[in-house]
Length: 119
Length: 106
Image (cartoon, rainbow over all chains, first blue to last red; front, side):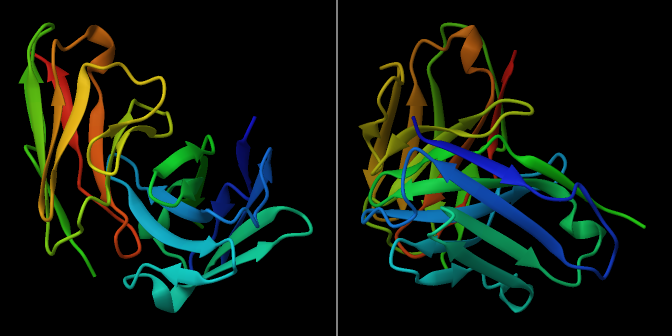
């Protein structure tokens, strides 16, 4: 059964770097019809795509966050990661990782992890 | 980048109603559109993909239609479990979500 689990600090100081990891079990990061992404949801607001990595290692970013985001994958650990630099209070959100099967959408999500940016 | 506009932002309905939510894309996305349901403090759940294909296990009262730039999610015979927020998402060119539609109990 496919499961995704986010992990990382729940509190980050302003101007520092937010780092999260998504551990995948029950599927491979290299599955040929999949990509893996990060989505966030600020309190009381909607969903925002942050970035994603395909099975072949191609990486795509939301243009509005591109200058501050790095998404990477580790196939040996079956994990993919998010780094968001120079965070502010506006980056406070629930961060989700999810799997996209090509043509089918985001069918599997992690439970989400809350990250608060505060001193 | 492609923008997605959902309407309405809030919808008041009663059990048994037929509910329709609209999503418009800023440019053609063919049929590369998904719909999600989200309940408070839960991850979104995929309902519909490729504009009109029902995800496995999703009740048949949910249906999707449209192509190009205009899409619709319909819930026929609204059930108590359906009060939630619904999002559309395009995956034609990277990913973009609509701003969401909250379906609340009238």
